[in-house]
Length: 602
Image (cartoon, rainbow, N blue to C red; front, side, top):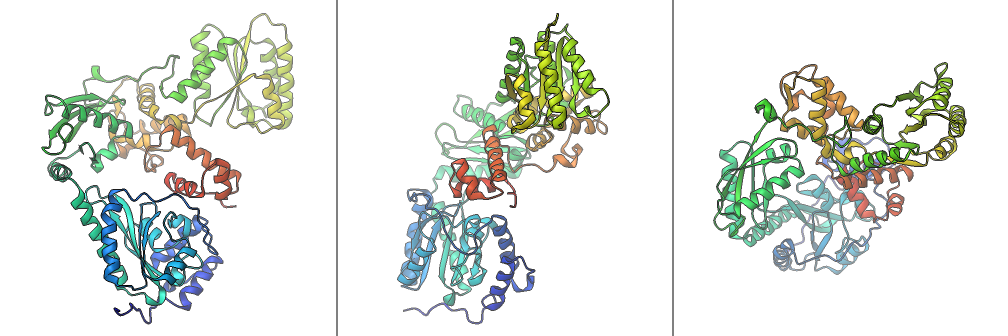
């Protein structure tokens, strides 16, 4: 039998780390000299995820799918390694990129039984957000090799183990597709364990590379050559592979990427695959595609594409694309959720029913009400009263007078800001207005930023048969492409200022907590310093430079908001939040990480 791996006198093992972990878990100061920097950082992340430190209780997620390129390439490598280890107490573990254990190979019954007890087994995920610091999850979280000894583990019952995990990257795309982990008893750990894990990951990547088709390799080589000699947007595609360079991901949003990829596939499959093609993007920017077929990259659709964008500012003025106008005057936007709200408000106005219009601050409630009034009754009077000014002398008297004697359209803004006494007084005025015998019709709408949860506000809304909720800008972020030129045309009527694709992409990726009004204010500040030419990312204020990792679809944005609200309702308890949403615990942890949500602390 080969000699057992040993690591005598390891400084990371012993009372120092154990005491440091205990101090960390009891929120006491920890001497950073006692704990490795990467381990301490992982402990902080584990605390952020509210990982239980006193036990491991994972949910069985699913039966592992072993019919994948990763599994097919890795299992022969891992089987050969197990034979080479010749019965040593080392467990060989393969996971997917989320830390889900796909396979576990071991020759030691005692170690196998312990790993079963701590659920380090196929079908369970050892992601860091579920288990805390460990060789698998921490390697995947950090994106590099990681070795965790004894008490460096965050959760109890792992302190007798040592783990060495290494991410596995796809040899062509470079994407992390899984991890390989070697786990043994702490007393048998050796620095060579990590070296062995690295070698094993490399062998798996070589097997994946050999399994890749010749056409993918040829496509990759041509793509890399084009990237080296060409500036700007470059992407490659075949029947199975799509590659985009960093410039393409930074400048194009996902919708634009899809448009260009579809056009490139169609061109490469056509009779004249090398003929330049011009595509008009939704932002009004023209993209010129130069396609180069790659022999062997697929009979019909394999090739490399170089894209050149024509900025709005560089076009002849007659070619500048004006934003698509809404069916209502003074509005733009074509997002499905936004248009649905517009149609609902217009229909309610046409029926004569009074309306409560709900939506976050800055979504455009007043602008929509004004547009509906101008579109349907342009000759009638349009009056606006702001409940935020209700503290001023005479506000209630003026409101009563408008309700009893006014005609046309009356909008009372921010009714959710009224104190209980003012709400009761306004309710009495509304009741009197509904019973008044008036000569000219009066249509009344109120706006509010929050959904009523009972009390006086709910009583007031009884006088408004319908409530329509307008979506926040993040739920129809595609309309930023229309809103930016619309606002610029109002701020700079001479039309000498446009927005570059790079700056537009920054604006599209921003979160916009202040919604459409925040976008307008950002552009108002920009035009104070940039009055002609094309707005560049450097012209935008700092608030726009903190952007999301990717553009969320409307459905993803609503899912993110639902998770945030559920976490608030559950005082930050992720298990309760997951239960209320009908999600598994693993799913909500993954979604929190994916959307960059910072859970509230209870």
